[in-house]
Length: 330
Image 1: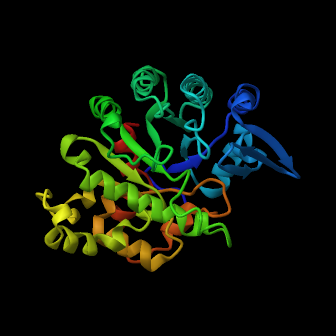
Image 2 (image 1 turned 120 degrees about the vertical axis):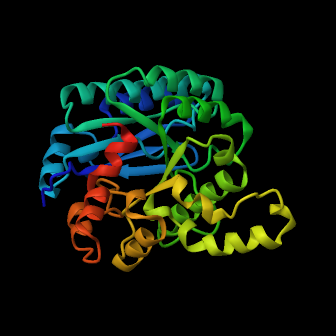
């Protein structure tokens, strides 16, 4: 599976042990707690929860998993509940803890582990300062951001100073669902993930396009998880809406003109859909992702890309690592 290019997984989650300890200790007064459910660790806030195994915590197990699946590099990211549930002070402390731990992990394994920063977006002025601080840490290569912040969409002007800071740094902003749309109708059948995650990703992309964020920050790139969620399949409908709806009369370009302002990971779970995405946005805008190591991710992310027979060798190299190396500045 090894290729000339380093294989770089851009969608790989990590919970540092020190972060979990802070979450349980300092978050208790704000409704946060950690429980055990057999082999699973369960983190809970008053609104959301997530369950994961020790493999998400222990770096040695992670490296063995990477070797087993042919992945050379992880760009590690915190996932649900991130840090937005907390008060501004605790959110900042949790973000700093994660970023410092990610930098320490990179220092221990400099060729293999990098970090995507957390920032307390519930207090944007603190988030700007933490982005600027984290950028000075070794191995921190971008911002990891939820697809909405406690129900506030990403085109809200209060977040624009954070985007300006990321643009100045040359950072890509990597998006990920946390608290998804339609919770009142997605409680059964794991629909909050099966439907909620791709729906919320598409909504986030729509707000960035229609809300003018991409126009205001022309050098800022965003990464969409789960193969772009609903966005690629809806782009024709968005184009039509921009042509006929008065609510979108402000649009100077078609929404499809912004497709290549995003990168997209490989978690499509269907080879035909994945290849449609590659042809729609270009192989140079698709990057390897696994959702390490949740059951809703790709067990063998490199093998998944290797079996896409319609890819040219140069396209496969871009997806496996070359594009990720470029946007992460590795």
